[in-house]
Image (cartoon, rainbow, N blue to C red):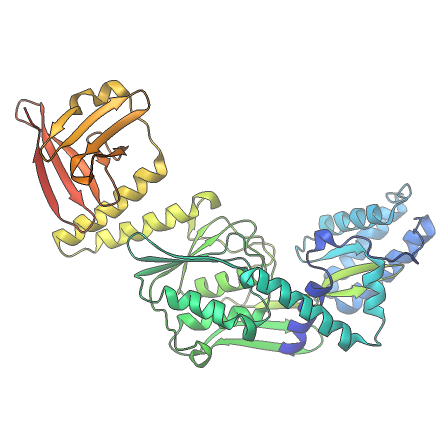
Length: 450
């Protein structure tokens, strides 16, 4: 059933790349549909049939239809003339009765005709898959960024779990192999809207040395698919570092599957906003008169919590606005490392990284008058000065290169990519020199010249 599940989802994606773009798809032969009360009645009756037959929760389907009937009797749809307006209004009312982030109703006569036409479906699917594959290649299979952050923290951002595992394998394998030697990994799913459950299982497999039960997908008619991590499909990549997953309200569906599963088995810490709350795989079904419903026909069931994230979203352990999630994850990592540091050089190095992160993210400014005591020349040709635009150091040891000093604290500043400066005072309270804190944990001192 797994292949059927994935195929249904992919057919919908191939035929309509984004529901917001799926409007009327009819050709020139499609006469404009003018909505009348009789047409609305026919549509609601047809929608009742497909919901009763396909929707994962029959009781909810009955609740939905009962609400539409109530609204119809009130005349809520009587003045609607355009099919897209009717689809939008019915969609809105269905969500009032019961919110399901995956369900959509749209007017798409071309798509409805293709779904109803079983002749040549295999050929159309091949064409759709070919076009979708070209699109995914051009978008690097939705992997947008891989880098090593300060402190040897791996960062991987991808915006979907694509269905083309074989074709995408060189891309995602290289991405995770690139961060294999880092001390922690941040996975950015803040713009990830989901995708293939098989790809979710594939990516999860990089993080477990043994097979681990992660999720079940229960189809109303066709039984249950059981998803396990599997080291044999992990391309000899095993990532055992701490994992932090960044989320937002846009994190949805398969991205929530990945986040929820990793969180439940305590393999990752979630940082960011609560996710969108969609746990139901979907497929397109023709309704009537050129309308198409994207209907959830299955549901996820975590083997440990015996529930899912539908309607609630994945709740982060570290809740923070999604725009601050990366900075917060980095800060958390450095803080935890610092708490467990065993030697002074290691503590200095980690404190340097934490100071650097916090200072660069805060963008704090200082009153120029408070900087006056620091002005002067220090051993080695470090000239500290201010002007109308800020606080600067001209460094003779770097070819008189000029660096803008970024405040860390009252007396401590970022000089460059390797050094933080801390101004020191004499017994009389005057500025006497500079302690230089190096990124590798070393310290040095430069006295102020008379």
